[in-house]
Length: 307
Image (cartoon, rainbow, N blue to C red):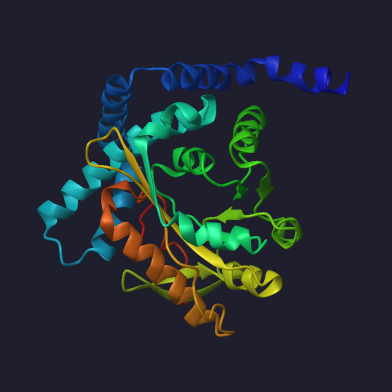
């Protein structure tokens, strides 16, 4: 009865647009692949043209991270990033709404031996993911080879939160609120792998400042803390859409050695270096649309974003 009552509240008109969005994602998930790429590109181009606030954020990030690029190349990367993230919306829909088994033939997964070694030892691992446009589809593809839980940020819209959490629970096994440190530690200590993406700005109190593309960035301390509390190997995972647009590449790197060191800044810098090297392979596929450098090293430092 309580489930029925809980579900009935989503019939309220304030959720109607959310239902449309969810329905659209289901439809998008079943589009032919060529059409998905075309629709995703259109979404990306529309966002590039009309989402001026996000475009300014992306322009600032790319200007800071790629000062060696001239303005023309920087602007091209901004546009390509919007296109990649537009396609990423359709990829997310596919990952959430369809059985990933139908994509097995599209995946090349290198470095599986590193995780297989961890599994053979009966350990839980901390998987370092990255906010590429392929993030959720990458999680679905990863589930074809290895089970994992995921740390995530709950959505503000209750209906979309339920939809998203159910989808991620199907892909990953368990979706863990990013504030539930005990839950993360407990799952790893019982032998589960946990996928965690530490490449966003979570504010001054949770962070130390470490270089990211040569810019001092607020970098969360939790990665080293989880590794220290659990003794888990820290496994970087890289995933990209290949240039053909139809196939994907996942790659495990070897577990980080001598990590954590106890030096919070050095540990944060090492994680940032791993993430930066992965981004440089296909920079257009990264989520440049968020304010990665929002928190400045000193409160008196000028803001980097005008939005």
